[in-house]
Length: 172
Image (cartoon, rainbow, N blue to C red; front, side, top):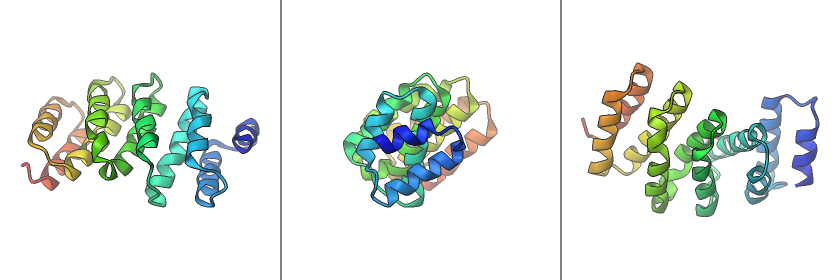
């Protein structure tokens, strides 16, 4: 935990460099994910978002899987007020949800309200994660829900995410 405190205290480290550094120390085994989550849990929103972004890097670039409790914590972060915390949490959810079918209902319930968020990036991130869910688990009620959400979405870029996922799920 001292490593993280020191990293965030060093104001000469740029945000992207900080994310990459955290990613690298997780991959090297110097920092475990539970310690990062414990640190992020009580951190200010910008620090929490950076920690979650590092988790996104680790799960996407290095295919490191989160445990069910770790992913459950990330899914809980989808209820945050801060858009960056939300969108980073949605991306992590997308990266690992296929390995945790027991958390599909929790993730879906947390993502649904975000499909109506005023922020385009938040809605895009929710669409990205929901699309991953229906592609991995093409259940008819979820497919119908996504079709409805897509029909009501104003941004074509977000509708395209849903359309691509529905095609993969062979629902259109």
